[in-house]
Length: 125
Image (cartoon, rainbow, N blue to C red; front, side, top):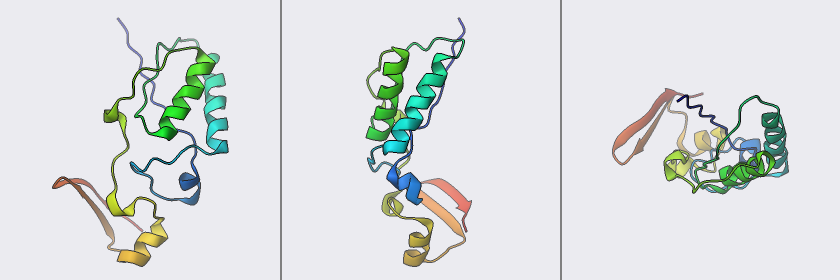
């Protein structure tokens, strides 16, 4: 049996548009994000394969994106799965890069720790 899994990112939110890190903060889709989900749903209708169901993280932006596509494709939404949730970014959620630098300076390297485990270590500018 062949299994095909499609991963779709949620549509645009006001925080995306402003360059703010969302993480697990539950920010809803904006109008453009809803239009993006509708355009994607219509495009998926033209694809040769059939989708069986949709699962989201449960965050409202992902849930609404899934619901829009679900209605267009006429496929069921399964219960949300928290394992699909965005990473948590702690105090930097809601901030732009400029706001982070203004608050804490530019360390040159971003270290993100969750539950005493290093999740991200990368250079930032």
